[in-house]
Image (cartoon, rainbow, N blue to C red):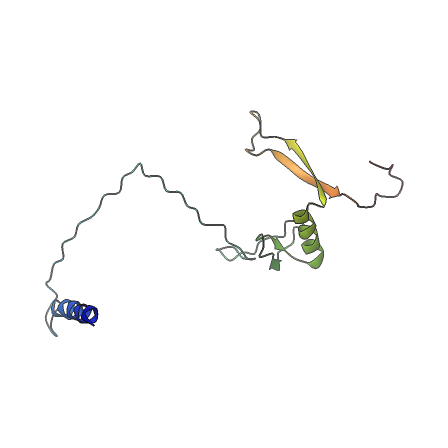
Length: 134
């Protein structure tokens, strides 16, 4: 109860500092400005926006088909546009595709983590006439 009374008293005192009706506001507050150091580094650690729309209103594209995304997978935030592409995303997450690392991100690489790509499913059928294991 004492806490509430102190809060009400503080609110009342702030109301008394306001000008009365018809008077001009003449109260000057102490304006101190803290100078921010120029050498302070700011690390933004917010995650990338999820969903199918970017902050500027454009729609994201499906990473599998290249078409505009209609849905996104909430488990990993990847946008997709059809049931087939969603199945491919789930198979990728389960490790059902071959991953080949072409470049390990060495001295001559322009990419920090290297370059790699997915090639195909482990148990997928080969095209007709292709030798086994090709």
